[in-house]
Amino acid sequence: MDSRYRHEVKHEITYADMTELRQRLSAVARPDPHAPDGRYHIRSLYFDTPDDKALREKVMGTNRREKFRIRYYNGDTSMIRLEKKSRVNGLGTKYNAMMTARQVEDILCGDTSWMLDSSEDLIRELYCKMNYQILRPRTIVDYMREPYVFRAGNVRVTFDYDIRTALSVHDFLNPDCLGIKAGQDDPIILEVKWDDFLPGIIRDCVQLGNRHATAFSKYARCRIYG
Image 1 (cartoon, one colour):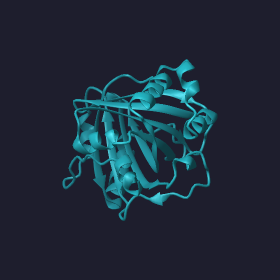
Image 2: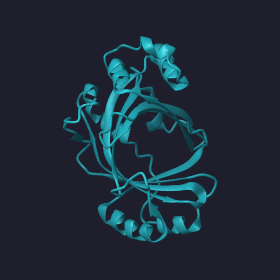
Image 3: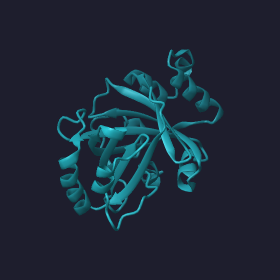
Image 4: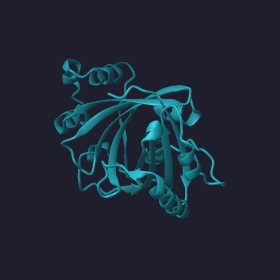
């Protein structure tokens, strides 16, 4: 379970920017070993309240906020994780717990009774918040990620693109789900995360003179369909 707060900066960039940054990063960083083909597919199921608490807090930039999601990679539903991301004073941390596809199906069908007896603290926490905050599965966020890592500072640089969603949360585990592009444009998100310090070599490497940090949210973008 991750618990250390990390710095996180996002930039919305162009394809030309990504091509240039790839060349720079390949000279100083290495591809994430968890991405043997240089990239991987992520599908997430985000939770929210009836009054869109998570969405509103993200859009408003609330200083203290959290969001729950269920996530798996490259279509492999044998390794599904429940995650809670928390953000305080601009720093983020993440907690996670493993889930089975059957457990996810139960939640999607409204059966949460088993969660209170789970051995996972995070699953029990989600159960409580599904009851008193009325958290419910709200939208699917689907995209490709190209990650790079740099040991000093525990730096992780990623490009996220081909962001898509689906009309029904019940398609979350469906490998044949046809994703819908999240908006008219096709954004690419550069994300840089680090622990206590960002090495100068990486800071220089990811500099783009005409780009500024953004509060871009893949979840918010995918909520345009409901």
